[in-house]
Length: 210
Image 1 (tube, rainbow, N blue to C red):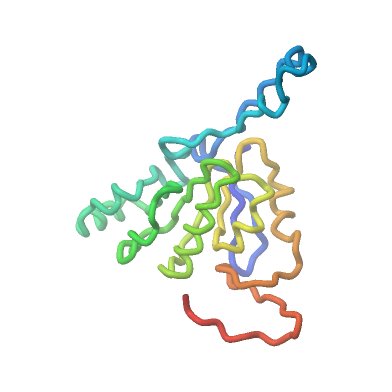
Image 2: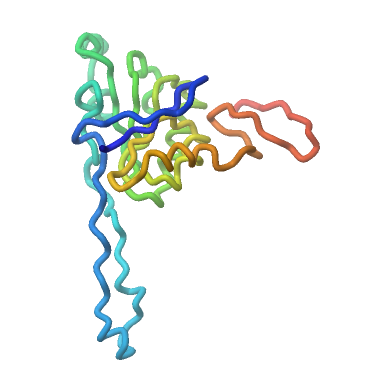
């Protein structure tokens, strides 16, 4: 089963099944190095390491539970009338690529229920910034879902940035994903999740708007 880990305020995080096409499948294993070359001293084994996931030219997922995802440019090209018409078909889900500027959605979030943020690679940090901007600058209160190369190791940091949905990559384990959300009992900095943090002197400072 391919899974969505979802955080609901006031409730335990829970696992939901995802329809085919709403998740990224597990990548093929890295190719094995030619040990004859390595043992002959003609190359470094590290030169044979390849990244599991290449930078995509298009989103890795095209649908969610309520139908097709809409890309940023397409949504912004819709007139207000077209957006209202689209809402009659069901909840709206958008897909943002790592290169998209979320601030372009200012004034255009009415009716949007879910925004999927693409992680081209697990090491790509742009999605964290996108989620933070959606929550703190734009005040988006719908679901912000991480999609693409989403690993258990990232979930705690993603949640702190405002993600509350995680479309786990095909080889990830849902039970361990839920555990990952609780791996740190205390936090020591502001976050977009609104979680209270701990200071050494026990004094909570006043937060100034960004």
